[in-house]
Amino acid sequence: MVLVRQRTQLKNRIHATLAKYALAIPCTDVFGKRGRELLHQKINQLPPQTAFTTMCLLEQIDALNERIDRIEQQMGDLFEVSEEIKLLMTIPG
Image 1 (cartoon, rainbow, N blue to C red):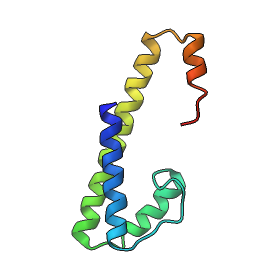
Image 2: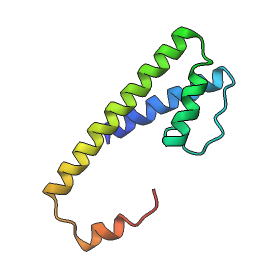
Image 3: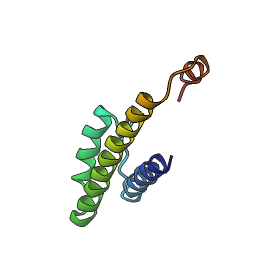
Image 4: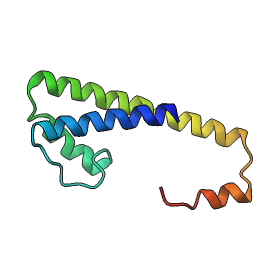
């Protein structure tokens, strides 16, 4: 949960940076595949130092995504999936 919270903070920081420079991304998931393409285009419109910092934040998000995936995989290997957990997993995120 801590890593997910950190990832959310980084994403919020990127959203705030784009808003500060009035750069909107017409996409529902800015950090998805299509959104990333648009995001990189907008980052190129930022001042150089801001663009550099924003790219660093994206790298941190990617690293957190990898860690979260590894932890979730390990948890899946350790814990048996019960009927209750299967039901919980059907709840939309």
